Length: 141
Ligand code: CU
Image 1 (tube, helix red, strand yellow):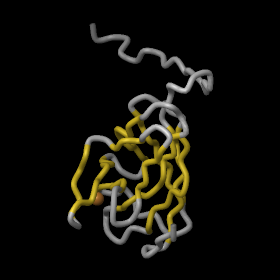
Image 2 (cartoon, rainbow, N blue to C red):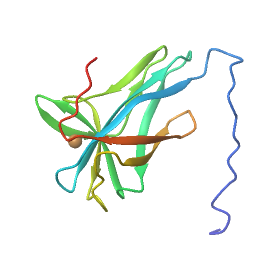
Image 3 (cartoon, protein in one colour):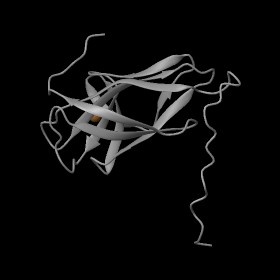
Image 4 (cartoon, rainbow, N blue to C red):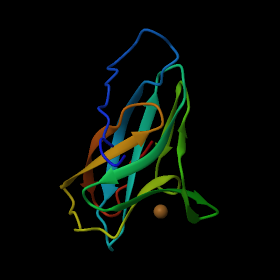
């Protein structure tokens, strides 16, 4: 039974019929220009739906090993998922939770754009074009 592994995906589309579904929107994405063969990524996932979701993984052409990290006591640690609460948001920002791109295949420069795909427990994946900013870039909230 090795054949037919890839079942066709049924796209549910954008259903606003009920309040029991997560409705996700990504904003404020950026990547500081990497200074080593690792890079970090930051963004906000807003959930205006009536159900929570989880960010479960991230993929990118830039790296075959993209992880999600939390920062506790100034140390970062890999986690398996981040909550995106109903009527709330997941904030990935400097000094806190972030996306970590290991073993970069190339080092993007300020002004470049990196395509990143976010995978969720419930929602369809979201592709984000992440702009590369100066290495010290830190937006004010
Ligand atoms: Cu990290």
